[in-house]
Length: 254
Length: 86
Image (tube, rainbow over all chains, first blue to last red; front, side, top):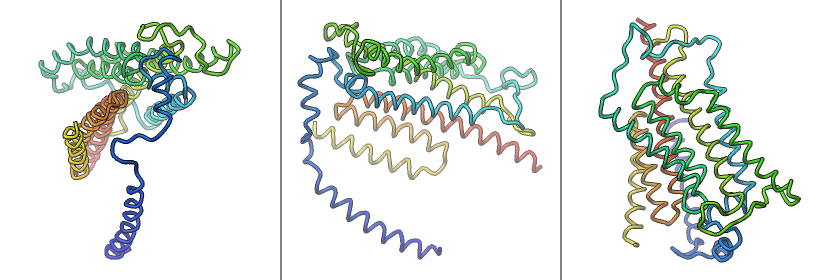
């Protein structure tokens, strides 16, 4: 296809797509106008029904909890895929990372980065845990908190060394955290079945809105998701780092 | 409030265009991280703090990090090829 023909095909397609886009835009509701019934219904009944002040959490982890379980397993499958893809191939071998090798020296991390990174690790862990356990009260939850927890591991790598990261997040621990988190969601769902109602039914005591221990199954599910996401992201991080720093093809040097 | 909304829209448009116009992958990862942050601010301005938190953690931290690590690996491979040619 010559560039000229290609441009013509593009222009024709752009005109058609643009016309459809404009047509679609004219049918949009006015700016700031909400027509759907669901948001209004939820705003009226959700806090009274589920005692969770964060209505988003009662939607994602209760009213449509099965969808969220699917989302969690998408992440699980994605992390699994990355772990399989990034394993050491047959023609590759592992080498000690630069920091370990006696004859090589990696550029030293500057003291400023080191200090800022290390000071941030504590607050970041605290913030991640806060986001997870308050998921049913304020914005946040297992997913956000889990990723924040994983960034703590990243800070450890940035401020220290790869070896330190391996020490604070051994593969076994991240693997177990990810699996237990993923299984925990299903276990909370089966709790409903065991209680004689439906899968993922909110069968735990609901408590009072605004209390840390309230909203029934939502906080435990949040914790499970947090564990899964934190484990998954740390696993991703360490797989990528291992690929970059440790695994070498024949002849490959740093 | 409307001024803030228009401003954040413009910012998203500018940052998105900047990501497309940046050609070097390394610079692009950094610009994409900024774009993720701006997108998070937009979600926050439109009163979706839950989504804003996810957007900031994933768009501004996790995604650029994966890109940077992948780039580092690619460069290590390229470095080894160059040495082979010599």
